[in-house]
Image (cartoon, rainbow, N blue to C red; front, top):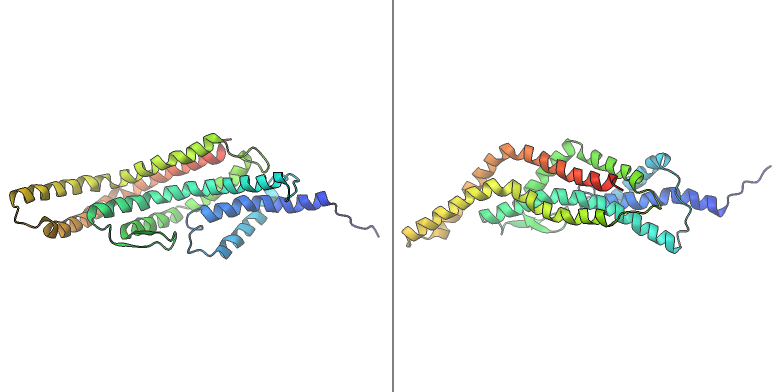
Length: 261
């Protein structure tokens, strides 16, 4: 009976074929919106990462044989984790456009004090930010945005193969550039309401000059609050096209990051 002999190189090849993709996928799941929220237990994300790796490994090219305890193996771990975190972070920036928009609107309406703890991130945000984040998350899931993002992460193995060069300065510059896009996109959502509330505040300024005995803060706060909610209701008529434009730009940046070597 012939004895089965497994060399150390074959064993490292077999383990590495699953370990290296697991690094990128698990980092991606821990950073991407919805799945990476604090409300999702870490155990669920780990199990989801393992299932994804088991399904994905048969279609991936063979992984390089590298010792896990060597300096090259350590650098490969850092490289795979960075790629996964970068792809997930891009979608976090896209979703936080709506959080920032809600923050802007709340500050303008005088609801900046109405803050609560966000269970998905553990950060204290305004009520309107929670509302916009919940609305954008439901829209994101309803149009299968999570599947599009997952497909781009899988396609990144063609651009950044395991053991390859990894991301360069241009990719990190693209990620940094999303910071300015975050503020401009949030301002695009809030600009109609900003303009309307500015006119309201200017009217109260004229009233305070013409009738100094009137307490502007007592009269102006409830009126500004009510008008702010009415204006939000009117701006929802144009929310869906703006949402899809922002999502298209954000996923376009993610596609550029994932598919450009």
